[in-house]
Image (cartoon, rainbow, N blue to C red; front, side, top):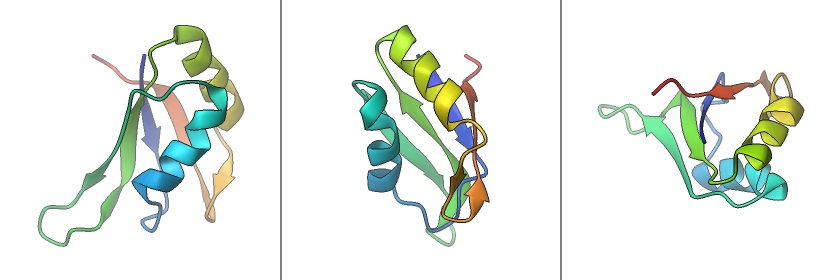
Amino acid sequence: MKLLIRNLSRTTTEDELLALFSPFGTVQSCNLVMDKDTGTSKGFGFVEMPRQGDAKAAVKSLNGKEIAGSKIRVKKAES
């Protein structure tokens, strides 16, 4: 299941995002969306987890959680 993570701090790295989701299960892919002009994070990214139950547990636990001073929003990505 592909998840959309919004309202991330601009300083959050892909490694930190991976570390945040890993306790819930296998993370297939993890990527931040970067601004091509500045090379900095746009404040959102995607995490893909192969097992739906793991992904749902991550959404339930992490949606609304404060990470690096920002309250993140986590939901299933629209296909």
